[in-house]
Length: 343
Image (tube, rainbow, N blue to C red; front, side, top):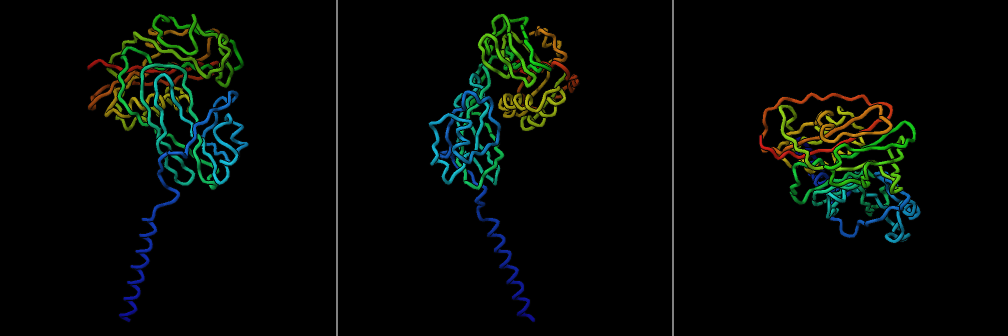
């Protein structure tokens, strides 16, 4: 009987050891790799607008559907598939964009991208890469982690990256002017006493002067002297994403509009210990840069976020945000400014 108990104990110990070894063994489907030669830069075809996320190309024919020839050949698809890595960036405010490592866990792929921040504005764009993956991966959820290399300081009296979206109910000729155009420093497409575009319900725009298609109108301007007010929000840097997702929804942005807002401002807010954040009222925005739009839209949503990095939390009255009605011909604009003033 005594020997039987000993055998049972030994058996249990062996099972525990085996389970521990299995747990500690590296998971082949959860590895982090350096990029090296597993990633290929590709150029989208001119007739491709914005390629959908999370595409995995399994054949050379699929590759030719989206991208120009010259980077991959039919033999590259023997034994491998290629996951699309789409990097959103602004060529006038971000440079040296470099994917340097990636992690694969099942169908989840995380790519780490480093970049430098500079001061400027032009149309946001995408850089496309194809990441070599095993043939067993035919679907992928791709996440891009952006890592800022530097700490650039930009002028504090500038309204950065205001982007205007137009959503008419039917295809419409639209003219837009900015009342304080003397403050403009950068625009895209070029602002020549105004913009004249053909706007479609899906938000796409055809600029009549350049005959090019855009999904928004871009401007930045100086002399936007903002200061801390008695109300606002104190947000810990690590809570930036959840804060912006919540507040931008209240302020009336769609998921895509909020996504583009967060992608641009997250690297400027998240590294700070705390941020004072306040959203200007429509009246305050109009006092700085009023929009004149023909024909008149049914609803206008203007968001201009002012922020100031803080080393410690301070007490401030929480800002009351009002959700606008979004209906009919809708115009949406968002941007922001950094506050340098000491409180």
